[in-house]
Image (cartoon, rainbow, N blue to C red):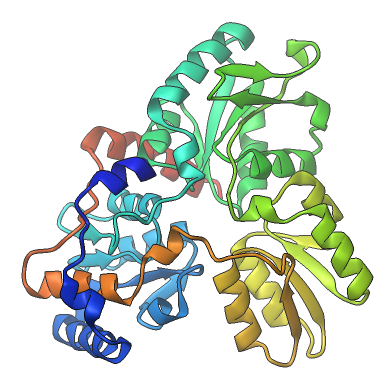
Length: 367
């Protein structure tokens, strides 16, 4: 489901929740949590607003949260405070008796929307005609259930930013080439770290429906889908140069969804989990410029007052779609469960569930 699809869904929040004060909404959510008890679980992604994350029963990255939700057999409802593809993953991994709710259906992901089922089928047909069938597809977990299903059907697996090296290494042992969806930057950074030169990486443009590569096609090892994270792509080499000039003692840590040249010039790169753990383990008085989503950077600044922490890009805004989840929508979702009329259920069809689960299981068996 694309952002446009979600925008077309009737998600008009009742006026009561729009007009309620912050105190009223907080009180309402607390009361609902108390009444529902173990029947409801609220996973909260690291990039969520502070006002929302305070109600999370568990915080983490997308796959971690889906796995924790799947392990919680007592919860009848999973109110997922994240974005649409994350809620889909939770629906894939949880039981048929459990219901997954996304508080605001407009909470999508621009990266996930850069690869849809139709585009991927076209790409696969063209690429296998050009390069042969010895290609294994991998998809970042930041993708739709339909893309995970496509990858699972064709023998591939999902990857996370934490285990991408292990999964890309596995894939290159299985087949001559890989197709990496939908984030070209994570794919490029991972393959480069594994020793694949940039000259052996091609880019598939799903809009132009063409393979962008100069040279002998036989040399292509990695095919990168032309997609990106709208947040992480905004960190630049100029940002790094500014930090180096103004804060010479400051270390730079970035997410591997950033551009190759940014990752290449940083001191450390790693998943959201690695960024958090690195800052937690850093010495008091240490200085850090962080290249990731602003809500998380602000939380790290707040939680580590003895360390000098800034955003690598001082003009960075929080992820706009992630920020769609707010107190009014969370209160509305919780009340809907109390009223036995749950809103915004996320339901992946059985075929996509089956093959998407295969892709996830192949990763979990090796990661």
